[in-house]
Image 1 (cartoon, rainbow, N blue to C red):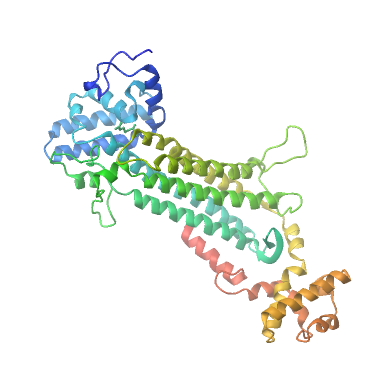
Image 2: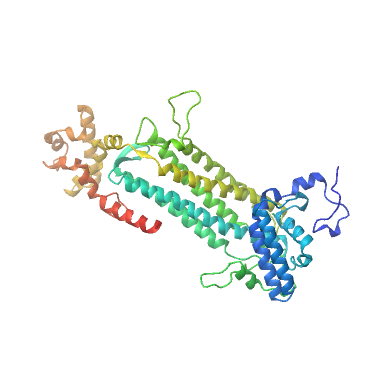
Length: 468
Ligand code: ARG
């Protein structure tokens, strides 16, 4: 077995030989955690400031360390920083390079462990990621609002069991998606809040004997409440063992993914030749390599597919943490790839959804033809009887009989004669056909959350306000 030349790594003091090449390859994480560099540097700058504040390093040492860290950040952004798997992870790569250049950096890791360091980096990452995803979801919501406004007068059938059920404005359906996305946004805001506690100072898991100031570091890093008070984690063991925010973040991504997939599925159905309510933008579709006439809804199908991946990431994390003894275990290094993948894919999905929604065309005549089916107002026929004092169960039964009669006669519901309908139930008066005036039928659905034009105007105004 080949062994790497030296035990030069930061923890190498007690080792007489370095790890085997195979072990290096196996245990390195810098290939994926290098993207934490900006957060790691931010954390280290705050750590240096705190050490200077309490007198564990001098002001000059702090300045030299911070300057060196800024230089490294610059190199990272420019793609010039050389990551080396022999230094395992992002933390040691940066510290090693910094110490080569700035002797005082040998003091940076005072009262700190990679355990509280990685927890800090990740909490900073989560705060950043939640803001990013919130903004991307707003992008999709704005596209939805535009589509709703541009098609405010379009009616379509709403479905249960994928069977035509009752008429709704298309905008009402779009606003249902809007609510789903709004909850996703709120969920990311909540994850942000849960991430907003500073782990630094927990050390390996039992704190430190040195006189550090955790609140100072927390404030430096923006781990503060609405009043600017420092938020520091309250148990050093839990601090380095806890991965709840990872689970919550991946959970929020998985739920958003489920929402994207349901929206995508509706779009796929609507764009099929059988429905033909909409046409999806060419820019988000692809053709078939064999059948020249095909235009496939690939963006929507991938949104459906990606949701499986987001659920898988959540599952990976749950399984990773389950049954782990307190506190830190190296297993936890595997917590980062699923989190990063969930972030990247959720961001992509939100953008693709916004792009797809932003350019879809509504086929108004097809929608109008589909919603003209009088059977969609069968429930209104029952409500009519209720207003005449008939108990709903009896009314429901009577309308069933009317539907059956129309079927037998081979005519639409509203083509039966007054006598035929009154024959089924005497409460049907000469005005019964007014039920099928679609415009009035929609105006009657006037309660909060219902699809009347007045309610939709209210909701449109609400979303304009929320989305700015
Ligand atoms: N790369 C490690 C991780 O991501 C950092 C923490 C290492 N801590 C340790 N005790 N080995 O989990």
